[in-house]
Image (cartoon, rainbow, N blue to C red; front, side, top):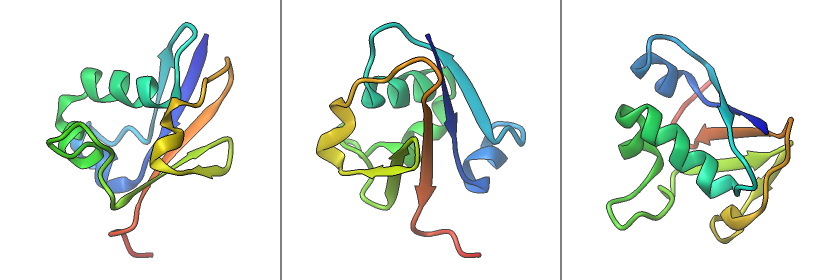
Length: 92
């Protein structure tokens, strides 16, 4: 099962300009996808997670265009899902 995680320029700058990562997951959740992303790209972990392993409160997570609350990171993912992470600290 393939899930795409897209993220802001702040993230992309840290991993060579890549703006999205495709992850192969089987029967996982949005939170597990974010963990897989930060396991693959450890330099993103401090941006996504607080030291207590909670979602950084300045991050907004969307699943297929719908914003999730932190407690909804247990939402299951399906093949083709799009997860987007946005930072409330980035300006436009």
